[in-house]
Amino acid sequence: MYLGLDFGTSSVKGVLIDAKQKIIAIASSPLKVSRPQSGWSEQNPEDWWKATNKVIAQLKAAKPKAIAAVEGIGLSGQQHGATLLDKDGKVLRPCILWNDARSFVECQEIMAREPRAVPFTGNIPLAGYTAPKLVWVKKHEPRVFEKVAKVLLPKDYIRYRMTGTYGSDMSDSSGTYWLDIAGRKWSDMLLAASDMRRDQMPELFEGTDPTGQLTPSVARAWGMPKRPVVAGGGGDNAASACGIGAVTDGAGFFSIGTSGVMFVSNDRFSPNAERYVHAFCHAVPGTWHQMGVIVSATASLEWLSGVLQTPAPQLTRALGTKVKGPSSALFLPYLSGERTPVGDAQVRGLMMGLGHETDRNTMTHAVLDSIAFAFRDSLDALRAGGATINRLMAVGGGTRSELWMKIMATVMGVPIDLPASGEVGGAFGAARMGLVASTGEDFRKVFTKPKTAKTFTPEKSASAAYDDQYRRYTQIYPAIKEIRLT
Image 1 (spheres, rainbow, N blue to C red):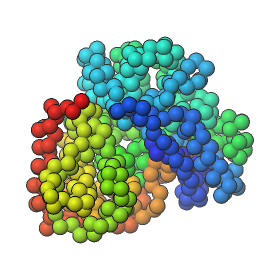
Image 2 (cartoon, rainbow, N blue to C red):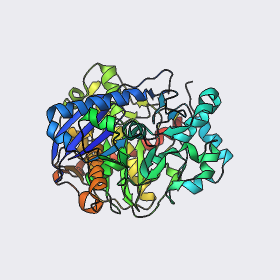
Image 3 (cartoon, helix red, strand yellow):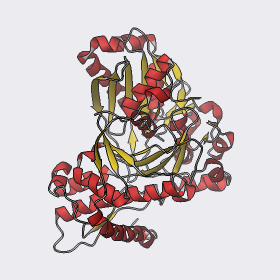
Image 4 (cartoon, rainbow, N blue to C red):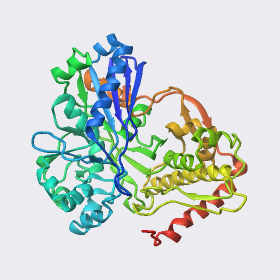
């Protein structure tokens, strides 16, 4: 048996699979985000550990024999979070999360201090990355900074609690802005640019490597007498790619969750920093990936749901399933800033084209359109970086809306496949990595693609209208980027 644990922003999820990759059990436990100031986003690492134990308890209660047979565990996690530990392994402050925007000034300071950083990494530092967060901590919380002995990403903090070891994988570490991504090793040059040292970093592993075993006490508490090995794992998107089989050159997918991701696997390091494409290491050896990131994907729909006091599924169902053309309103989904293609943490969202006739259906339709436009931005940016993408697989909660999938296919102009299996996300990919780390099997034979349940093709009758609306959409940010309300 093999276990995958995915540490997201809103929950911890566990997936238990057998040697044939059949799903035996699934469990989850919710998490909350703290926003003490505008643009801030934090979580208490102890809450991750408590939620993890709740997930294990659920799985143990449902399948005690299966839990007792676990031999390998893989980890998937939200990227970029700065979890700061002292010399005794104690947490110094709440973790600053991936969608925290406070350190945008510090990004400029890193580039000014080290002009070689962008050409070396192939990435422009963003407020969500880990390194600018530490520059911010040094500036605003110097007493905390002085005590920092280790900086861990969220899933790697849980690894530490599970195994007592400090480790991370290449894919997740790529988002720190301290990694030599082409060389797959820590960079002393980048560390120095934010006044950090190599000894403050965890040991690096490939995602399929074993990094340690459960400690005896954790193994007893979890009912796992075999003390399973813990795989390196991956950042959530790289882990999802392992779950969906996107581990070979040109294989791609997009994910519609709280954030949105357009992902393509590469056999070489292929940066496109000008369009704010993330060029990171993959979670499998000798492989990299390009990634376009939308900060507020389903989060935009949930925002509208809150404003209208109507559940999001009810809003989307009211639109039906037929694509007739774009909404008469236009929405810019930059509620927490945006990464690809603008790299602006301070910009905020906009709804335009409102009239007396505008109703909730019009606004809901505009939000669905806007996320499709944002994905098209990312798709164009990845293609400009050399990727060839003629077909995509879609995962995430947003795929439950048939209308949204039809809009996506029409806007992006490519067929979109939905996987037949119910679980192909980060937790499933992590379980696969746990299997490989435990057995030593070739990941290429384990990380296979799922069967296709349904394919959405572009609605040709609406394509021209959507192309026109997309052109209008791309004019919004240049027109407003200098306008700041605060």
